[in-house]
Length: 172
Ligand code: S3P
Image 1 (cartoon, rainbow, N blue to C red):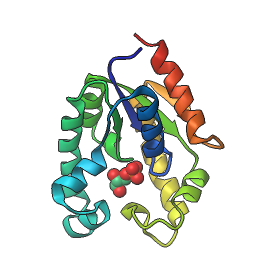
Image 2 (cartoon, rainbow, N blue to C red):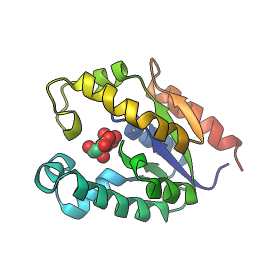
Image 3 (cartoon, protein in one colour):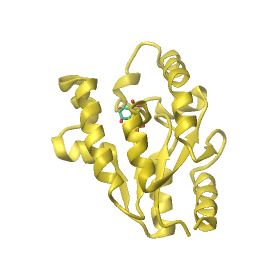
Image 4 (tube, helix red, strand yellow):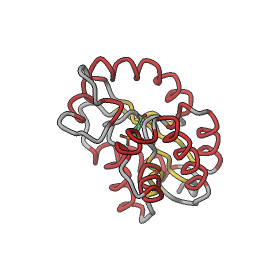
């Protein structure tokens, strides 16, 4: 069984938070969410932090949160979708963790985020076009950071969780 942290990366709406919760139950491990750490520290929502402090300030807070969660052991780390944009974050997360990329198509992401207002970057006139644009920029970063890729399209949360669980069990 893997002793290191299980790090979940992937675009918004790919299922990271739900998979993290299910994995935590199965493995009896803690979940550390970078977004939640930021919200707790700032006593504010991610959407409002973006609005009042801007994206650059959010990325600085995210970098601090990454350093904090990377020092945990045997945790499940639920990251924000943009965490891979900073190579220092990836280095930190890999220091004591194995990285699982939840790979989803723009169409699936679009379906998952519809009706939700908590994704400031997708709060635009044409969210699907924005998803495609961001995914195009980010896909190489996700792929480079990933130790394992888990397909998200057409699969249930338990299905993805089981796949990760089997991999984690087989690792030293
Ligand atoms: C972001 C993803 C969000 C959150 C913030 C920025 C991104 O997290 O960190 O809105 O840049 O992709 P989720 O991936 O959990 O939605």
